Length: 143
Length: 408
Ligand SMILES: Cc1cc2nc3c(=O)[nH]c(=O)nc-3n(C[C@H](O)[C@H](O)[C@H](O)COP(=O)(O)OP(=O)(O)OC[C@H]3O[C@@H](n4cnc5c(N)ncnc54)[C@H](O)[C@@H]3O)c2cc1C
Image (cartoon, rainbow over all chains, first blue to last red):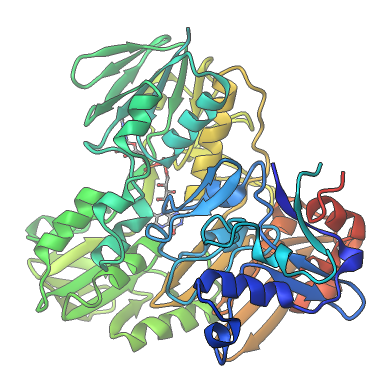
């Protein structure tokens, strides 16, 4: 299936993916209005030590330990995508405790958020990929 | 066509069913479910009292799930006796099996304290039925005494904090959450709970009850309307014991979840397994392990070849928005950071990360947890780089190419 993959050597560390991700989740028309003066909690994040940089989002693992560990039954796998039922999640963060990639995002007192490959918004193709200026993130079949 | 029988009805049972269904969609699965409702999330009973979830949402799978997968569910039926190829139920029914999973979980342990019988409103806190009974017994004027400052006792306190007038929690130990926290972390958690009006009597226990009054070992007394006993849980082993399975504190299973008896598997709170972080056998009564053990058992029962050989104790819980994460064991060299309300402790031993405690800020802790579970030799990664901030920068470029780039 198509997933989000990163090409580490092409990442510029510009963090645009984070903004595009947060914007896609709002469903708004204008990014500046939607995100201005707000702290964003994107479902993709850039790790950067000054020399190496790349974006990380949910890997939709074959054997997803977050799904197996979820105490509330909020996480499940549908058509290869790890999905979260925000209504069921009570924010215990067991998924954050077990995810080897740090890909789930705690959300003060609310449901955890995570990448669902933009199937949870009206974006179509993943917003992080569409907006990446250097093709460092792509949405395709690999491996 | 194989006959699979699953005894229990908790999360381990569901894990097993999922495991079986991955291999065999022809077999006949019977779930003997002790409670009279479909499997639901036990840890959520306190959130139910807090009105953060509902009984409907707590149910793990819909009725259709069981119907569509041809699973026969016997609700409110207990397995009474396990024979070589049959389970005898308390309603007289006999259910034949080729492969059996016993996932009967654990039950609250209630110590025989003098005068306990004289307490009118007393409860344990394990099941939905317990939560409903407690809910019916409390009101805004209730004074509640909770015996036990472990995870279950404290979760109960949080669940009812806004619904009663007074909560006192006592425990023999000198700290809260004594099985997962050290003293200074435990004190921080206790403070957070005290800020919400919960009172603690630690290093103290009830000597005797006299109606609505508890006399403590220290000499003090507590007047209460409602009592919750939450001192601990005991694995439900009666049937396996009678059948002759090897048992220590829990039933012994290998890493395929086989008991010492042929065709009988066990998973969840009633098992004793290897904690790879400390190298010791113990009962690790937590939900993720219960599911994963059940899943592994289900795979093997249906002809698969699956091992679950990286269990560790781990917990992610919170009280009034203050998060606690713990994993592994705390016998090792300590790396520690504190800032504001947040605490971070990492324990390193023999070139491995063996344990962690986080309070407050918990972003990306899973990166550390997986180092513990995978027994990653720390000299194969740049551990120094991620001691402060967890990230994948510590790993080789090849690791990232494979896992983030999908390049094999
Ligand atoms: C209040 C509370 C909060 C918790 N919070 C957390 C948490 O945050 N994180 C975490 O990891 N864990 C938590 N736990 C622990 C977690 O709930 C257990 O580890 C998990 O439920 C174990 O699953 P299980 O399937 O092994 O057993 P159980 O959930 O105990 O299910 C076993 C089932 O078997 C049934 N049964 C027993 N005997 C028989 C019989 N003879 N025949 C038929 N059926 C029988 C029982 O009625 C029960 O329904 C919490 C527990 C409680 C009570």
